[in-house]
Image (cartoon, rainbow, N blue to C red):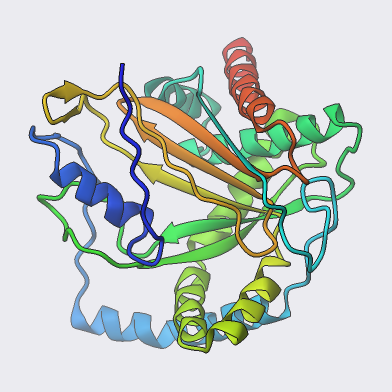
Length: 311
């Protein structure tokens, strides 16, 4: 077995753009189906633009006035530099994409795979902190990165180019909710509200403006913004078929994002060939055993599957 390690500066491209470039280097057709966008008339576009103005104003106000996230085991310091030691661990989830789709249908109510993944992450963080003897007393906020260019990674159907066309939303994870289905309902409700939000676009514009400032000022503003969340999360779709790189068939793929600002914990989820891979990158002052966190995430998914099948 062999592995290919590819490192790049995030300033060049976001995860979706890099995945498209990777797909462009693989030789075979991928036969991936994506939801097509609905066509809109010029009148509809004008009406949509007018209706966006109050939404944009509301999103901007919410971002600027949002409070710092609570201090906890996962966010031990406020306005303090990260340590120099970072740890990265990853694992494959025990439940496949096809299995999750079936489970979501059995739960009903339009439950999505993302609802289940984020709910399982909340349960995982809850259990980890309890095992460490520092149970969380409050729900925590996760910064979830959102692609503004869609999720189509097929290079034949989308542009293959560098660039960061992403935004972010603040997702409250119901850590204090003990029941697995109540936790899922809470995540689903919040995600449903965020889907109608203009926050990702506003965050994208703010990041663009901050990036134009002198470096010392930009760093201060970035640090200020990262106080508002406990962890950062990325969810990138990969190829859902057997994939060749050169003359070798790939067995798995994952990606890593290092801690930045005052965020001690980053979770990355990637789907590949019907499987789910989770990567946890952590500052050791906050998470001393990220591999255990990966295993707890898998246990949460396994428990969810068992409880749904018993209903």
